[in-house]
Length: 216
Ligand code: SIN
Ligand code: FE2
Image (cartoon, rainbow, N blue to C red):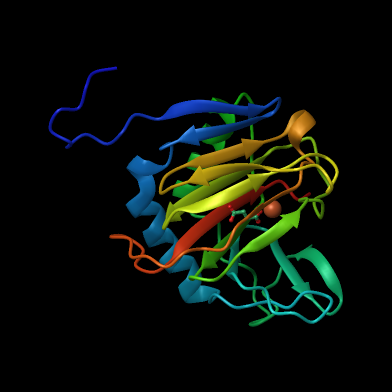
């Protein structure tokens, strides 16, 4: 690696192993960030961000939208994937080409070949928003990894064990970082701590997270 004396080169992507089956790909999405954010805007123009309710009736603090064949939804009937946006009754927007390419190449960089997501959940965090520890377990296909892309304001990611009681490690995530977990790590608990207020040159007061899954 060469020393960047003038600060005009984007940082090189690097791979940080977390546990078996999980890695942080630092800066992996940096070069595509503007394209990805533009695509988020297009998706949100068709399927606007909304605060869905948990089965228990609480509004999620992160606002969500989805694209791809399937979208993840939660309401009084529970958590599930469905082909239609409950707000509009229409199919979810197509998965943008830039999303598919990035998800596939990130999975491959983490050692998972041939990842073809059919669902992308887009979380938008405003200051004060968080995501409690949970497993991604509404998918039918656990053989495929989860690819999680961070854009905008930084946050602290928590990556735990296969049991909720296991103490999670804290991983700071910034703009352009990607986390991939699969194989023996696929069912690990994870979440993010509360987003702190800030201003990002590309996303203003927000952090976006794209989570790619193979749901069916
Ligand atoms: C999630 O697990 O659905 C979101 C994680 C994140 O925002 O980084
Ligand atoms: Fe998750």
